[in-house]
Length: 85
Image: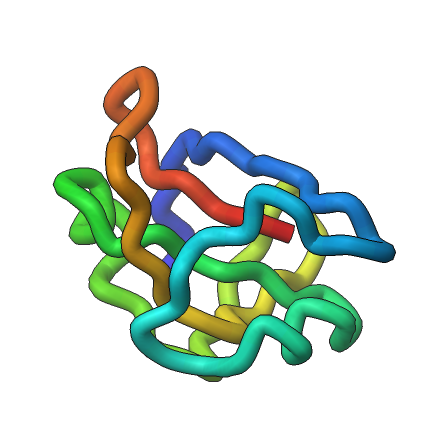
């Protein structure tokens, strides 16, 4: 929709995916797809417009596709939505 929203992006190790969040929706293997991200459902989730698996948006003018929705023990770091890639 053209709205701007700051996010926190956390990169996972490609080999082990160590530190990956527990998914509520989607498959962790889908993170290997091009432009894939996992969105954390926390108090900041609504700032992204409540995306679903398959939703698309842009991060720094690059396409991003929601591959999964996750829960974490502590989210909302710095008051911005959290994404894993």
